[in-house]
Length: 559
Image (cartoon, rainbow, N blue to C red; front, side, top):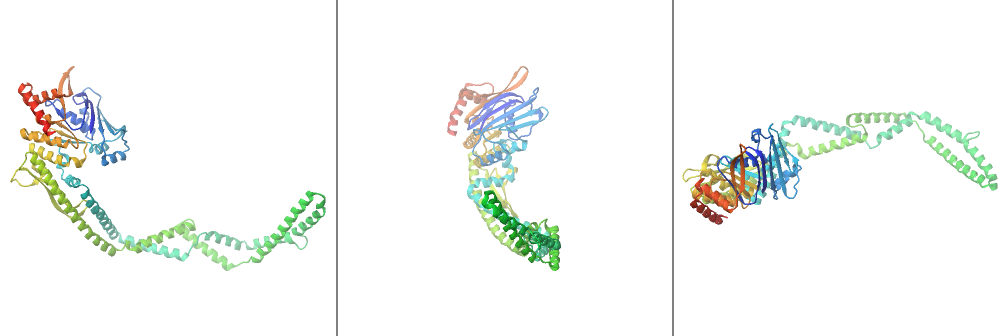
């Protein structure tokens, strides 16, 4: 609920600090005292557009601040989280500063936000209902969401089932349309993929193949050099005259002859012996390599051709064989998808027709459930109208079929009313006026208040044009709404003022040649005098006071 409202230098208000509680609060006072200015301030704090004329004359800026206690409203909490706004101690503080230059600064829990964000969050906090401001209730586009909200979870389940089928149907329809409008492009793509797949399959590349081929080519190109160097190494190790192996053998023998005289000589002999045996082994390996060394010109030509093919594929599909193989895998996957009828118009049309039949059945089911909910809604609203002393009025939910399917179903929903017997049903927006409109809106607001999860509902002289028993009925309905949402009402009706939980008196005074607005939270005696003034005018008579006390006593029956 709205807990605190601070207004500084706004219109004719110099400064007021209002503390609110739950239930229903009324604001009363003479015309022009500033009651609607307070509502305007709340409008500015929940997304209303401002201008520099709203800044009090002689001030540089106007400051508005509201503190709300935040309920467990999923939509509101999601909007706050999306904008990086955290809740501390369950409170939401909205601050707005209006400057004379027209600039506006907005903060929500110290987070700087723009007007669009404030408006999105504000719609969960306050709903202002005035003589000419019935907002979504008079907007036929909002009637279907209101009906669905009234239907609760049972309707929501059927609606979600329809929405899933509709999304599937829309997806396959869009896919078919895309194929039909780009058939040539798809055919060209298919031909290209098939060519690439065939070329890569024929190449039959293997991982690390390029490295192995380069190694083999290097050996063949340098065959003579390799053979010469192997021969030179063999001659150095085992020459006809004296080779390294023979010299190592001689050194090993002479050191072995003196090894018994010193351990160092023995160690040297062992080391020379190890080198001798290694040299012998190397000699045999060189012999083996020389025996295996051959020159095959045909193999060299084959390797060159293979490398040329690999380099050609790398220029087309990737810088390495690994890249080419990865590209080949993607081609295979895309062709596999096409092979599974993704581009088969005939098969897709069959699936679409099957899905259309299922969707049509679900749309009929959704309509039937909505029609049942509509009957319950009609009964509820008509009871509210009867309570508001409109026995000749009748409320009806009108269903108009829509050709084809839309995301919300196959029907357009609009609220119709008849305000007097025999006049016939007509759209809500075109029917009522004056006091009838106020009662119609109040009946609807009473019905939908719980589903809309609005924290505070404000009635700005929404009871204009009624009196007597009707005024008392309106007071009772406002109090009914106050059981689920906080209600603030600007009223000139003593019956409404008497029924409220709290009463604020708005007055206008002149101080230092300036007009200022004052707000007083009335105690019981103050309430009786304020109500008596509403009954009799400036002069409060004993009779008016007695009538005021009587109205307060009657209000206990309403509460």
